[in-house]
Structures are given as structure tokens and as C-alpha cells.
Length: 114
Length: 114
Image (tube, rainbow over all chains, first blue to last red; front, side, top):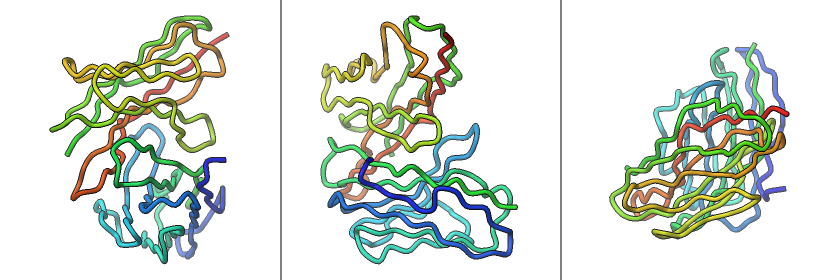
């Protein structure tokens, strides 16, 4: 248990479906992140939220829509995805005010687009 | 921004062999350095860290020393076990706009055979 909880753990969706991934942390961190991890590729930072404001969007297609209603919750809304979007989606949180503190990760959502 | 480069894998070893995974960093200052580990089916978790030059981080038999002169933070373990099979990520805290954002290398897969 890392303090960061992601649901669901597994998700299979069709290309025309709409679904959402949820992430929750009660570690008191001010920043939350979405990462995409595909087989044989580096970890890709998708979005950064700092005090619930989006501070980074790394050229992510608009079919991925993040939402951060408060510093403890982060969502990733998915619609009209492609098969190449199948991957492990990881959420993380951290304190951004100190260089010495680490990021805490959830266990991820394994997404399969069919 | 700051970045890390780590050796490509997979690294395949027999049980009780010596492990080295190389990591070098590029930074304008002196960032804190981290190693994370990802076991199959899980998110990343902190393995060890070092916050200043010549510091040695250690945990579970793994060690890494912050070398400012060679901008390196190589991960070592004297005798690996099958249970060490995982993906290892080198990381640093990159200062962007006043906030420290975790920045990861591409990961190195370690496979340990009995």
C-alpha cells in the first residue's frame, strides 16, 4: 500500500466507449501526475497537476481528458480511444516544494482498447 | 530541463551474480537522485535515494553513490536473487517553474535466473 489508489485495476473498452480512470491520494501531496507505460517504451509523463491546476500537458491527444477537482483526486476521462492507447496508466503524487521527496505511485490501470 | 540516461536492458544474470545498472544525469544544478523499482503488475516504488554529492543511498542490499564528478548514480548489488527480477528506474527532481517534478529514465529490466 503506497497511499495512492487507482481504480479500476483492469479495463477493457471498445473504441467508441467512454470510460474514466480514478486516482486518489491522502498523503497530503500538492501534485498529481498521469503517466503512460507501454511495452518496450520509456515511461511517458502525460499531465501534471499542481494544487489542482494543470501545469503540464505533454502533447497528449484530446481523446484523453484529465480532471483534478481537488489535490487528492485525479481522473482521466477516455473517449474514442485507439488500439495503440492500450497500456498501463500510472498515477503518482508528490510534494513539489522539495527536491528531496520522492513520488508515490498507484498500482496502475491496465487498459486494453479493442 | 534536467534528464537521466540509463543503460538499456534487459540485463540477464544468474542468482548470486553481481549487478550494476548504469545511470548518468544532466542537470544545471545538483539535483536529488533516486532509484525506483517496478515489480511485475505493480507501480513504481522508491528503492533508494541520495540528496547531495558523495551521499550513498542503500536499501535491500542495493547501493548507489552520488558522483558529482562523473554525473553518475549507478545501482549495484553484490548478490542478486530471483526475487530482484523487476524494472529499475533512475530518476531526479527537475526544477520547473519553482516546482520539483520527478523525471525518469527509460527503465532497465533485470531478469535473474535460478
